[in-house]
Figure 1 (tube, rainbow, N blue to C red):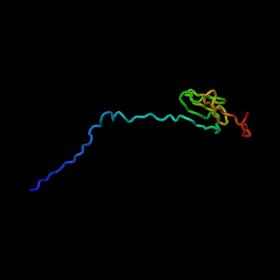
Figure 2 (tube, one colour):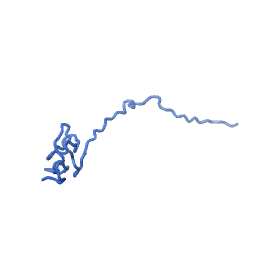
Figure 3 (tube, rainbow, N blue to C red):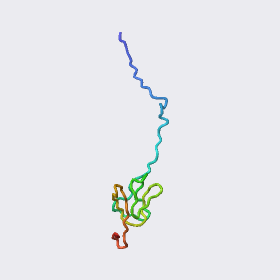
Figure 4 (cartoon, rainbow, N blue to C red):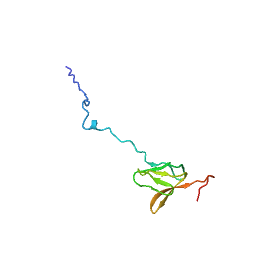
Length: 103
């Protein structure tokens, strides 16, 4: 009479993790490198101006380089970036008590 045909639509899911998936899932924390003070901003003495790996930017007047190549201000002043001999350099121009730049 009538033939009944059933089509089985089975979907199988993984019962094992798969090759390499259990070995994934690690990442290092970001180091938060880069510019901390922009051109024209006021830097207090000891303030970090630029965090870097290597000397991408070189220290100029009133700026020192830490052991991890971080650039920091040695006195209060205004941050100025400029190119010298093809190298990017950062200076801190001192501010007098009246609020204007010195020199």
